Length: 319
Image (cartoon, rainbow, N blue to C red):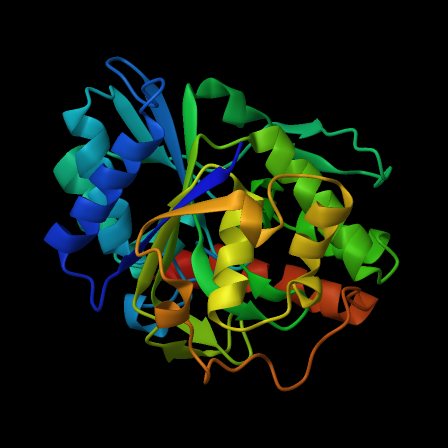
């Protein structure tokens, strides 16, 4: 059976257009069984890497998050939480800088920091791999990645976004434990994605990030939203649109090797915008200088220090 991917051309973050895409995507993937229903608790997992304004394209745009909240509340969902584990800064500070404050106030949405790390045993035996235990508090999880280039993994899309379910500074430590093997790191990402198992993924590519992502790149007007349940299929289609060879997207190549989802375009059924050739772009730039997976000890120490400065001093002084 073919995996389904829904694509939509969206030039800007007009709430009505984004919401229409979200609602039609939920309808498509609820055809056999409703994804959401009355009384459910739903977790939204956007990309909230660090504190940055929406126009910097570091985080999932607040309009995408708001559109999802509006659709879920109309379906009777009882509680919506937004969760992530930022690389720099607290979840509250990062989310509010990203423009999520009005969403929290208007729709009664809560921020929920990831907590209670639980060991995740995987085939590739990555030592000390733990992910947030409070993911099990929810009936459904919605994955909301930002389309970005990535200096280590080439692109960060559906599968990579769920690495945020690893809590805090465990992430750079895991970077070191894979022995600078990008495919091994990708396989770990696949296992995390398999375990988290979001019921729906919606990728924010209206304004993507190119160049030295995931933090230091520049905005790129891709003008695209993409939705699906098969994260591999989604990432495969999106790599095709920006003309990046799938084997160069290491999480995607790992998914192929682990037979996780649909990797072959012939096994992916498109909805919405179905002509890939009209969506492809020729000028999306990847990072000029790629980085190794492994962080040296000094960089890890600097990361801990920067987080202490950000949360322990700057945020407290800001009130």
